[in-house]
Image (cartoon, protein in one colour):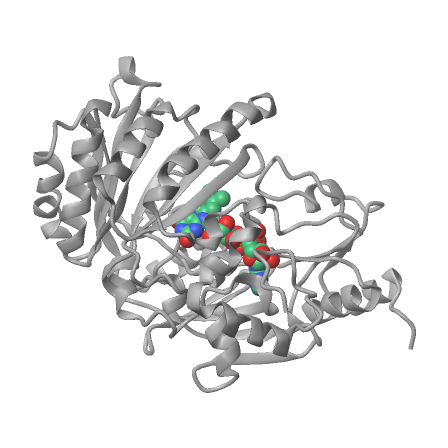
Length: 457
Ligand SMILES: Cc1cc2nc3c(=O)[nH]c(=O)nc-3n(C[C@H](O)[C@H](O)[C@H](O)COP(=O)(O)OP(=O)(O)OC[C@H]3O[C@@H](n4cnc5c(N)ncnc54)[C@H](O)[C@@H]3O)c2cc1C
């Protein structure tokens, strides 16, 4: 049998096969980061696992680059490629919740908005990202940090099983019982091992939370960061959230004359009993005067989409850098205080996510995600609308990163990294790297899945 033609691929696929000649190609080739401008040879918009198998085989037989797209949020644009095959899972978004076992099964193209909507209806949730349009796939495979991490662990810690199409085109189930090595690698190792068509998650009884955002004057930045460092080390695990340097958007709860000013903000989420929320937030009010705030009880999915408007898909240029931090030292805080206030535009920000609590209770070699001793994951997220501002924004991210790196771990969270961070891959996985290479050699010896923070076989 020769290599399959595009026509044979079309005949085999139930979803859409989109080439440059087809209507919809311009939209199909694009990803979330507007800076990425690539032209794949074919986009396979899959309807089911069979379509994924066909796409994988087509790419392998033609020796083409293969990009896999879940939610499309990858900052380096790993969800698209030039002259290769894109497996686009955006049609595969069904979520089935089982309230008896407190689990949910979600297809590989599901977003956190889709997922939270389905689980919230049954009073359940699991750790996901803070923006509703992010894909569950890329986020979970890299680890998964969010409001619930301190209490429920990382998203990958809540993974029960995954259906994976590997480079040989076979469907394998990965869990604690089957293909354990693959299951280990999927929990932090990113998209290196195959296409996950279905994820099964453990859920927690969380429906409404108490949360929101508080803005403090920049002169309080060091005080707020020092407070957060001490407070979050001992705070009840139901409390999540993060400090951020943030330009005030034109929102009704912020005084009009302060719109456009830069603040140190605190975004917080109490996922314990809602009636305890006000008391839990008291320390945030005692630390420094709050200039503006929007906090209170709300459905968990409402907080998870509260900042969506700041990050419209396909309209912003993205360049990010990241580090894990074990001790947020005074020197590190000094570096934040120097660079955070220079945040260039309203969309850009810096978040310092706490990853202690339940994240620490998983051994560093129990999953591929190695930094179980780190207390924080920092992301310097440059996001701006105008390509003419690329140089200035990238410079802000790089300068900030250079100032904080000496106070951080060598590695960072793979999902917060840029395309020029590939040389950090070993550091990102520390002692787990060699085992990841072994698993890669088993399931993808030819490195078909290389559009990612790549673990070379
Ligand atoms: C606005 C924004 C907010 C974010 N917030 C958070 C946050 O709160 N917490 C957090 O941890 N991260 C966050 N991230 C980072 C996010 O985790 C990564 O960008 C992640 O890769 C996105 O996953 P995706 O499926 O949307 O991306 P994609 O671009 O589709 O994929 C990302 C990577 O995963 C691979 N991949 C995608 N789908 C599959 C699949 N089904 N099977 C195998 N491999 C696959 C891709 O090949 C690629 O390498 C955020 C990113 C953005 C842009």
